[in-house]
Image 1 (tube, rainbow, N blue to C red):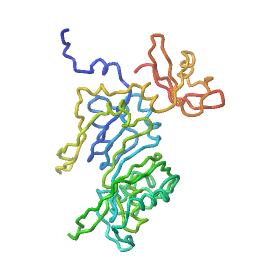
Image 2: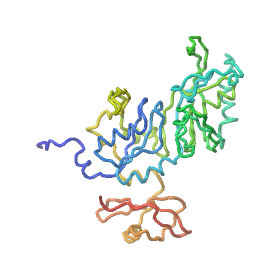
Image 3: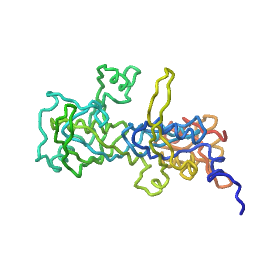
Image 4: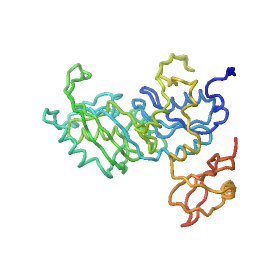
Length: 354
């Protein structure tokens, strides 16, 4: 068969104008940098992400494009799972490895002890940090204070006081405890303890804050040195079908001149295999099935949804309405919310075509 000269995935690219990708975010770039990489590869402006990851963090980042960006708010609200490394024995300004060490006698009321066992630490974690807990986000977080992101205020040297919020930690286990020595700003050495953690939690939980608060509880300080997200709701890398469709990116330095004539060097995210990008895409229906409960509706009900009318479908939570067409293909019509025991109405409608 003679080649048409078209790139791999060309036909799918032409037909799939809305859907999601699962990105494996690399370390050293922002979530927005990853969006920019997909925006350039897709040649689309309408691209977004669900669930921000800090530059230090890696792992699952859901990228939506086209009308499927409407699903992102629902995906970001799902519970999440992480694997991390917590360093006990010193705190940092940002509660992670990117911040400067904090030297304060008021903070350190205890000392790192060789008797600090894994069993003891897990006991503390289960007692104080599992279940519904109150957590104060890091001052270097994206939480807004009077419309301004907390990290912008903190970087400007302003005092940031954030309110505690309730989060749910469904599981939190520590493993692989080991000791290390680090060099402080003054050149002196300090012994610390590194311990790996696996955490499953509600949306809005700051793993950095869990590390900080464990160190505070012990009186020795603590911060995060590694963080990887491996699950958002049903988008779980433990599932081979999910892991096999993750799109890999790398972090690459680039230097440019800004408007002031200054030479700036920063990292950018680069897709490793852009010519096979479409092999890993989920269409709107597949994305919705992973993101929320789904219900099948008739052609007449689909028409009512397009006009924002109430339909006779009983649902108990936010649900995706899917229509099966005459040729057997399925189409995402709307996102529904219940209005009564037997009825629901659309809160978002997906057009028939672009």
